[in-house]
Image 1 (tube, rainbow, N blue to C red):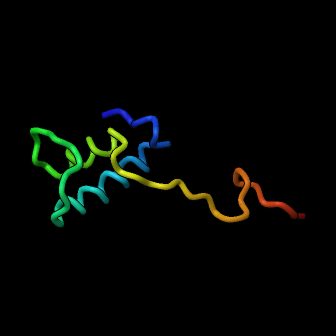
Image 2: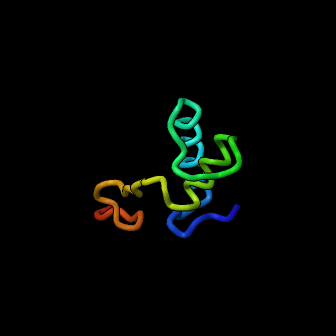
Image 3: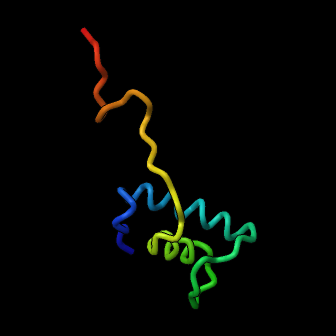
Length: 71
């Protein structure tokens, strides 16, 4: 499965899918109609369809990873 445009990296895609799969295993209802019942695949499809909301937070005071002040 390819990484969706809304997700900036494969790592984030995996993290989002894993967290959503745990929610599905705990009893959450799927947000997508699919023939598969495997929570991991359902979660990947949901994240790929941009149905799982997430925020990409940046640490306070960081501007592209450079710190002001220095030696």
